[in-house]
Length: 118
Image (cartoon, rainbow, N blue to C red):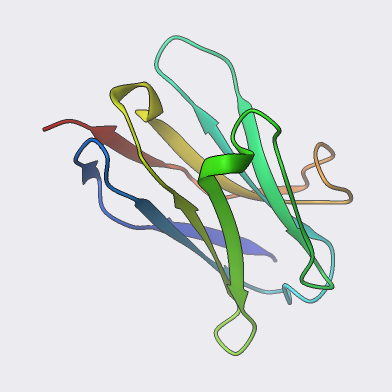
């Protein structure tokens, strides 16, 4: 059974960089596509970007300038970095495994709340 677990700080100050890690068990990140998705309070899900089995990445155009996704295959982890955060980046952040760059998610992490506040 594939399991994903997000980890990282729950509170980030404005203008700083948000960094989250997704640890995967039960399957290798060298297969499939691995996405970061967020849900701000009272809003819908927003796909942020993904890293493919090959290591290539693709980002949401609206977040591309601030987003970076990388991976550590030795730890079976992939990481999200979102720079220059503002309170509008406050959300529950999820990692998920899909069959393509976005959508078709078979497995999700439980989500982690990140609040941007001074």
